[in-house]
Image (cartoon, rainbow, N blue to C red; front, side):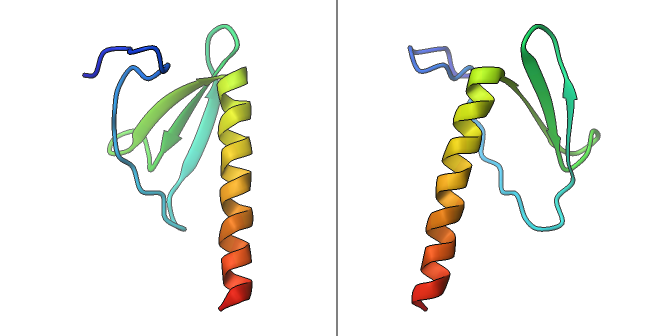
Length: 74
Protein backbone atom coordinates (compact mmCIF):
# COMPACT_ATOMS: atom_id res chain seq x y z
CA UNK A 1 0.00 0.00 0.00
CA UNK A 2 1.23 3.47 -0.85
CA UNK A 3 0.60 6.20 1.70
CA UNK A 4 -1.27 9.36 0.78
CA UNK A 5 1.24 11.98 -0.35
CA UNK A 6 -0.81 15.09 -1.07
CA UNK A 7 -2.07 13.68 -4.37
CA UNK A 8 -5.27 11.97 -3.27
CA UNK A 9 -4.04 8.43 -4.06
CA UNK A 10 -4.35 5.75 -1.37
CA UNK A 11 -3.28 2.66 -3.36
CA UNK A 12 -1.30 2.33 -6.57
CA UNK A 13 -2.50 -0.31 -9.07
CA UNK A 14 -2.34 -1.04 -12.78
CA UNK A 15 -5.49 -2.05 -14.68
CA UNK A 16 -6.17 -2.64 -18.38
CA UNK A 17 -9.78 -2.33 -19.53
CA UNK A 18 -10.54 -4.10 -22.82
CA UNK A 19 -13.71 -4.21 -24.92
CA UNK A 20 -15.23 -7.26 -23.19
CA UNK A 21 -14.61 -6.03 -19.64
CA UNK A 22 -17.68 -5.90 -17.41
CA UNK A 23 -18.06 -2.50 -15.76
CA UNK A 24 -20.59 -2.08 -12.97
CA UNK A 25 -21.25 0.61 -10.40
CA UNK A 26 -23.32 1.10 -7.29
CA UNK A 27 -23.94 4.14 -5.18
CA UNK A 28 -21.71 4.03 -2.14
CA UNK A 29 -21.58 6.07 1.01
CA UNK A 30 -21.84 9.82 1.27
CA UNK A 31 -21.23 11.30 -2.18
CA UNK A 32 -19.38 8.21 -3.50
CA UNK A 33 -19.77 5.74 -6.36
CA UNK A 34 -18.23 2.24 -6.16
CA UNK A 35 -17.05 0.72 -9.46
CA UNK A 36 -16.25 -2.92 -10.22
CA UNK A 37 -14.26 -3.79 -13.34
CA UNK A 38 -14.24 -7.40 -14.52
CA UNK A 39 -16.47 -8.95 -11.86
CA UNK A 40 -16.60 -9.29 -8.09
CA UNK A 41 -14.52 -12.46 -7.67
CA UNK A 42 -11.59 -11.62 -9.95
CA UNK A 43 -12.00 -7.96 -10.81
CA UNK A 44 -10.81 -4.59 -9.63
CA UNK A 45 -12.80 -2.18 -7.50
CA UNK A 46 -12.41 1.53 -6.93
CA UNK A 47 -14.40 4.32 -5.32
CA UNK A 48 -14.83 7.86 -6.63
CA UNK A 49 -16.37 10.93 -5.07
CA UNK A 50 -18.59 13.14 -7.22
CA UNK A 51 -15.71 15.54 -7.88
CA UNK A 52 -13.30 12.67 -8.55
CA UNK A 53 -15.74 11.05 -10.99
CA UNK A 54 -16.19 14.36 -12.83
CA UNK A 55 -12.40 14.58 -13.22
CA UNK A 56 -12.19 10.94 -14.38
CA UNK A 57 -14.95 11.46 -16.97
CA UNK A 58 -13.32 14.68 -18.22
CA UNK A 59 -9.91 12.99 -18.58
CA UNK A 60 -11.48 9.93 -20.25
CA UNK A 61 -13.42 12.13 -22.67
CA UNK A 62 -10.25 13.99 -23.62
CA UNK A 63 -8.39 10.70 -24.10
CA UNK A 64 -11.18 9.41 -26.38
CA UNK A 65 -11.03 12.59 -28.46
CA UNK A 66 -7.28 12.10 -28.88
CA UNK A 67 -7.71 8.40 -29.77
CA UNK A 68 -10.38 9.27 -32.33
CA UNK A 69 -8.31 12.07 -33.87
CA UNK A 70 -5.42 9.61 -34.21
CA UNK A 71 -7.72 7.22 -36.10
CA UNK A 72 -8.50 9.95 -38.62
CA UNK A 73 -4.79 10.64 -39.25
CA UNK A 74 -3.99 7.03 -40.23
